[in-house]
Image (cartoon, rainbow, N blue to C red; front, side):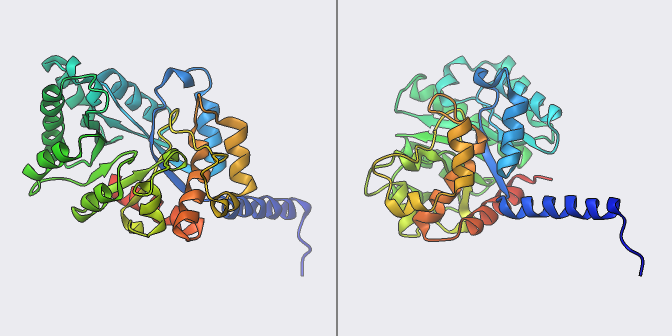
Length: 309
């Protein structure tokens, strides 16, 4: 038998190391990150690379305005197969709607890299735009999603009843619906789930101190894994794993690897997609499941829902 050459042995070691790295990583998809934010203007290459190194294979860049949606689409061309985009007008900016810019948004939506309509919806928490303007623009997004059969990526704050009333009017034709960055009550979540909607969870679960919110949703296993998505909403929603109200068993479920990415690269001022492993580990601990199970399920959901390659 011929003795393997040094080159062959070296090649085998490199492959083995690569495989080992795959196994120690989760395979994750961040379905909502605001990478067009100016906080990433100087080092986006590093941010995307760190995300990949942490296990985040794909990221959906959220469009919250016509200009932002155009920029999100541009980023998908720079990082093909890694970044995808959404296109929409955030309810805060509903007052800025005009027919000309809407035509531009419709052109953005036609691109295959744009995989969802939104961020759109209703926000009565701050009312930066009048409720009537918000509702009118939201319905335009719904019709656009129906026309292109692309999922709706929805923002809702303190507008649960009104948002559901509008969606119910289109229930026979609705494409898949994602409630992005869910922060409501478990009753709200159950109502959304009963309609087949998906729930997107972020580092907000570190902030949630209520007995009837996101944590109850997870602890009582009220959310089926096939309806769960994970996202960072970076640069926002930093997962504060040192929060005093975070249960001990949840903190103990955090691995050294995920903590390294979180504490080395992410801050309250600028969260990054590389914080997603920590978020998944916390979700898994609250649900009393293995992080690998949550990672696999949420990635599968995202791939199927948004048609990611």
